[in-house]
Image (cartoon, rainbow, N blue to C red; front, side):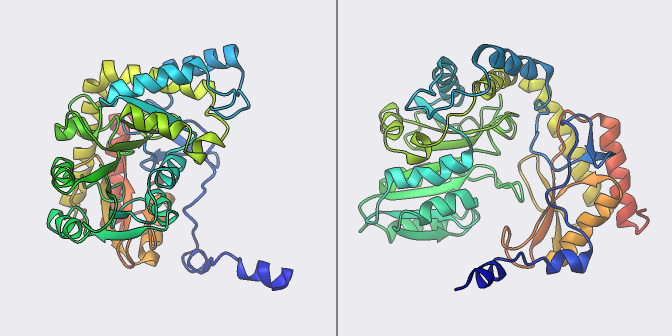
Length: 394
């Protein structure tokens, strides 16, 4: 293949962008996550970010990160295993473990790296991984990299999961992989029942709690608290860049496994350590959640219910959801992008999901109402959505 052919083969297919006259991705954000989001110099209502409880721009978190920069600088310029393991890293690892109720944790620069690198360290070609068909791409890609048998099970379908477990007894080790909160629709895994099935068939449960930590559970501690699971024997991962308001990802579980991962996970060992400033920000975020989740979570749910109920009353096709995620069913990729365009023209930023992120012709517009928004902002968004539904949008 010539150089010219190579670059021709790797051209972006932007047919949909040209057809709709709109690209909803990589917007030019010029502000932090305040009540208004500034895009290209204009104020937008932000229903797109995962800032569930609204702490990403909290002054206390910013102060903690600045203090850490003053003490440690911007980076330790090394991987954690070399010379990049600050005392903040060790302390936060234990704090996160205590927060979710597990023995030990390690922290990656992103949850994508955590999910992507987990299975190459713990699974091999003789194993089988049974995974929810709606699982995040970071999990799916991590599973595929191992080269073992993969069995998808129907989304949140316990009967289909058990059927797969029964048919997997000839494999050396069975893993069952799922998410807590599925981010495109807001469904929550029946994880207590999944753990019971894993115990019955000798499987290791793996849960990605990225949209659950800091969001669900009585005190915001995520899926294990939400499901009433104690003495969890499986593996837990989560993003620290959504409700936690920072950056990074974690893997938690039995202390012996985490010690093994420290010396076996290439995605951890060969990535420059997450910066001290971010570690300090995560630490402060966890403290805020522990002290204020009842208030912040209450606002989050109030806004979610207000938006959801209004959309249903206005005649929108809204997906069933147990989490504070509201998704409008839009259908084809073209219809989804055109609806996102209409919202954008009315100064609302929301997230369009199209194939292959969702099944073909099952596009959605996802909306998350952060607790940092003013109630009058939420009311204004609702009025705009009503106008659009009545074909009166600007």
